[in-house]
Image (cartoon, rainbow, N blue to C red; front, side):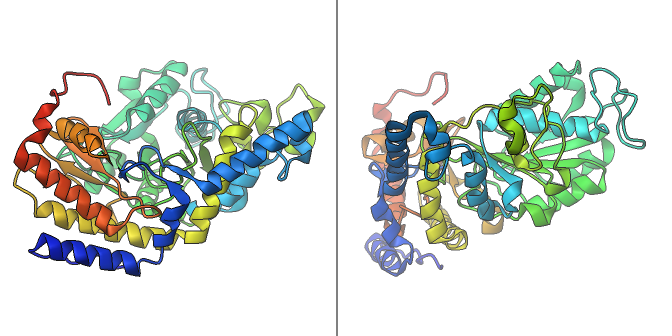
Length: 449
């Protein structure tokens, strides 16, 4: 899909945007969403769709009609909900059905998967106890390596990893290798490769898309780099799943985590997802719970934990059915539209936004990669008064978000956003800047929005 060309005349540019919307094969999907105003914050929380609402209503009725019998009598039954939804998500991340489970929260899944695979990288050793049975040639409990991250990660990734290292009696400052950004926006592949070559790295854990700038990483290339240097590779897909196609299995990715409430529109606090390559099936989770037990004998209540031979082994507690049901409906919308078509429209929308921002006054700048192959589904629009601009946009029913210190983050999600919407956002930014209307709001004095 080609974005409309930006003309000198705003009127002509708007007409071209309308014409592009008229040609858009995904345009009709917007009718299935209740998005407030001009909604450009779907990379934080996607809006409600009629499909998600219907799926939730169905489960509420099953709860009313069946009560406890819903675990077996629900349609589909609740007992296998995490595995069934995992199979439904799997094409979006390029995984085999058994390699995906829907469970937990993103941070909880980071804890269990990073902990598990860090131990696995150390030969299956308990790195806090000095396991003498670790695999020969691998990093051992007596000499554990580091976990490689970057300084532009979403903070929860570092919180969880540091906690896992402390749980093993390790100093995070000694066992967390951080790749620094050269420009405050992006991470250079050369710097990742240098860290893998020069440091004793057991595990690489990177996002697919940086939450602030929108930089899109080459997951296959990073996985190959990690494996070449003897490290395992895991990824956080929170800002890419549902808007960027992935091919985790073929790329040889060891594990991944993500949420479903952003581009997949599964609702606030929606249950999250995870992936484990089938080569690692049977691995013992660092955080084991009864819902990860093999299904066939789960209700025999055995004292010994037998992990499922699938990604389902990483489930900890009972699947939260009411928090999972909206995802069921949301996935129907995404699968009907097709992830490749969604990505094509996303690239066209963000290309268009970049071109429009380039026409704004010099105070504005594009803080995202210009090459669409290196950009996810949102654009970082930089401005010295980004916080006040964000508040003024909301006053005008344009919903975006602010990321310190100077980013208005704009996410034109393809299922409910059009080219004219993008044009309106850019023109509203221009008007606010030129009129100084954003000055009605107080400067940001602290805290997080």
